[in-house]
Image (tube, rainbow, N blue to C red; front, side, top):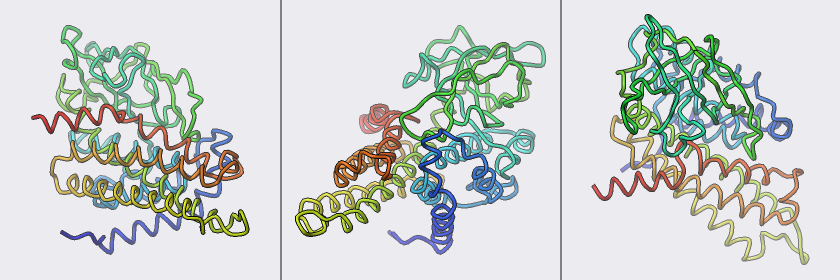
Amino acid sequence: MNFELTEDQKFIRDEVRRFAEAEIAPSAAKRDLTQEFPTALIKTLGEQGYFGMFIPEKYGGAGMDYTSYVLAIQEFAKADASVSVILSVTNSLAAYSIFHFGNEDQKQKYLVPLASGKKLGGYMLTEPNAGSDAGSLRTTAVLDGENYILNGTKNFITSGMHADTFIVFAKTDPEAKGSRGISTFIVDAKSSGLSASKKENKLGIRSSDTCEMVFENCIVPKENLLGEKDNGFKMALHILDGGRIGISAQANGISRAALEAAVKYSKERKQFGKAIADFQAIQFKLADMVIKIEAAELLMLRAAWRKQNGMSATKEGAISKVISSETCMWVTTQAVQIFGGYGYMKEYPVERFMRDAKITELYEGTSEVQRIVISRDLLQ
């Protein structure tokens, strides 16, 4: 059992860290305040190969292994969780869907522009009445000659106003019950009948736009059916296995940022004539933060290792997401506590870290859903 990263993995982690600290972190607080999408940064990251990190070079990707990918996402999240989720959705949900399930024509037409950084990706599964119960979605896709006609509403869509290519799930068999009869489509953002109807005003990750998307007789060519017809729900579950590891990396990055801020502040802040880092109460908080973060990171790396080696990572991804997201929420709350009243002010970053942390317990499967996945595996 080897716990050492390879030289390539260390290089990628360190390169992302340097770029993120210099180019992303300084403007993160301002973009959070104004809810400004990081358009220029995302364009640059696409050009640098971060839209298709683990996609093979033959399809325009960077050809990294999956461990390198999660290390990169973690470093981006330390600088700005909004940037990290934009990249995570493009990589692990949009690009991966086409790479794993697409035919060669679809890969050339849609994956290559995504992986090479020319197009940004999005993922549409959730609906107003189909969140954790994703199998109950109501968006329909009816075949009409050479096209499918899509109607329905999707919500909480990351990069809804900026993505170019979406992976969309819709009901193709209206008679099928439950999660059956769902199919997956590649949909161009410029398709007739597709529009962003509302941008959400969120607690955290505020410079990542999150939108409600509406299909009104949206025309999608039938050759854009991804994978087998009526097999979409199984595909969604498979895709989310990897997505959850990406969110685990995001959570761990936020946790690391909060820990580093708390350590720095505890050495500078003086009370009762000495730095608060000299008080055992603060030392114990910091020690517990390290314990939880390092445990979460190891479970994330285990899940990533299994994924990159072609092994099942459903349970491991769920475990990783639960511990990483719940640790993130706890760690950021403790960081605010160490800062005291200043931690509640926007003058310092820990209040943003705490707001950003909460979503990691919710999207791509709530902590409760992850526990269902874990217990189901155990009881089988």
